[in-house]
Length: 586
Ligand SMILES: *[C@@H]1O[C@H](CO)[C@@H](O)[C@H](O)[C@H]1NC(C)=O
Ligand SMILES: *[C@@H]1O[C@H](CO)[C@@H](O)[C@H](O)[C@H]1NC(C)=O
Ligand SMILES: *[C@@H]1O[C@H](CO)[C@@H](O)[C@H](O)[C@H]1NC(C)=O
Image 1 (cartoon, rainbow, N blue to C red):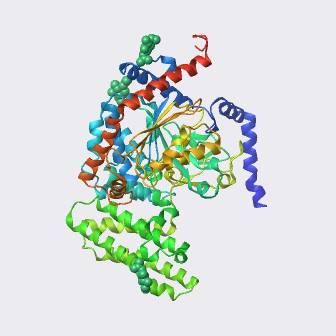
Image 2 (cartoon, rainbow, N blue to C red):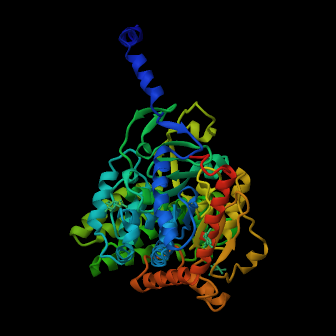
Image 3 (cartoon, rainbow, N blue to C red):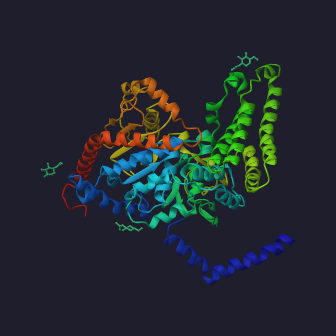
């Protein structure tokens, strides 16, 4: 009875809506304006407009390089910077600085990043004129940094939100500790900027689809205008990423994430369990020991270790620094202590219990350490931090974002996305450490990709992974010959993979190479010296990376000019194929 009673007013309201014509008007406006969730395989209006204006900048730049080009045949050139933590973030700034110096920066239409390179992108674009101010961008890397209080203030605000996760912690600590900047603007603010800089595309992957789902649910891109799944072409305006939707209808508008959080979303390779395999201490590296409980223990340790390292780089007084250093050692000693004898005597089930207990002990050690600190500001800050972080480490939740495809019906969406209210955006480097997926195919129709390689691991892997990805989604990609892979352990400083027909040409430029390493031995040593997961680099390392990246660009200027010119010629011939009579496309 009560249900019937409460249902009545709704019916009355509906009747009123229909009678008063409000519904009809609402439908009218919906049909007339764009839907908030939409499917499209072409450029959205905002990007199209930006790119059109950017082409004038590219055209001017090409003519100052004395290349023949006309307004209707500006080549589509993208710089795709690889991930690679701080190594990538710093080296990228060096590469761009040199490109600016050589007059090449303004030939770029697009700028795509994943993981570590997105940290630099976010920092660069905080200056609307960064392409003109590379000196300032470079000096920011060595800047005074951000105080722990400021970082914690940000974290305190975030922790009140529904979808607070480890990504927030990671974002604020990498912003403060590595990029030395707290940038609380929103990416969509850039939508109205002029075309002084190339158009930025930031990439991520959806964690669940990455693990279990079909390929079209994996790659995710965010530009100043739209955010969504590259292969399905399902997007929302960037300012709506994080808002709640059901079947394409807006349920609740939420504030857009700021650049600090976005940095956490894009650059959190730790979020994936597989990464933990790289940190197994030697005594534990026994196949029968490494199961899910062990992994949980190791990831707990690794996350705490990385968080402490980043926190260290936001404090400059010696006493708190040493205290953090001591905590880091305490945890390290626990994990590195050889417990083989103990484990050997246990059954599988008992071992599981042991690892769970050890995980708890790590957290308890952090608690105890916090309590033991001298009363004062640092203790207050740290207590707050541990109170927020420890539960998150146990829940192991990253990049939680309301899913705009929840119960979406208008077009096919993989079940794993359609049925979940939230998805989890994480580091795209886990799939491919370069933003290729967003730049393949007809949508952005790229002629030339300049790909400085700052990745760890096997050289050429980003290329072979992208090649295989392209094959799977049936998009053109240049041939990557098998012979070139033999250079893996000591690559040249520059390779050109020439695209035929609709394939883009790729200029691939490894950071460490035959020009700056005398042999494979030295190459390997350099890769280790600048490995991805280490405490933030000191000034000397930052300077070395900047200089190395600059020299690579400088040494290969001629190759780049040649390929840029070819791209212009190619765009011209694509254009004449489309429009044989010169003004038929006006
Ligand atoms: C540009 O075009 C002119 C006339 O078509 C030609 O003479 C010149 O060689 C071209 N320059 C380059 C760099 O291709
Ligand atoms: C772009 O906007 C900036 C201000 O943000 C201004 O200083 C600059 O002159 C503008 N550039 C062009 C090419 O309009
Ligand atoms: C750990 O200890 C066991 C004996 O308890 C020994 O056999 C093993 O070699 C040790 N592992 C390492 C990496 O030291």
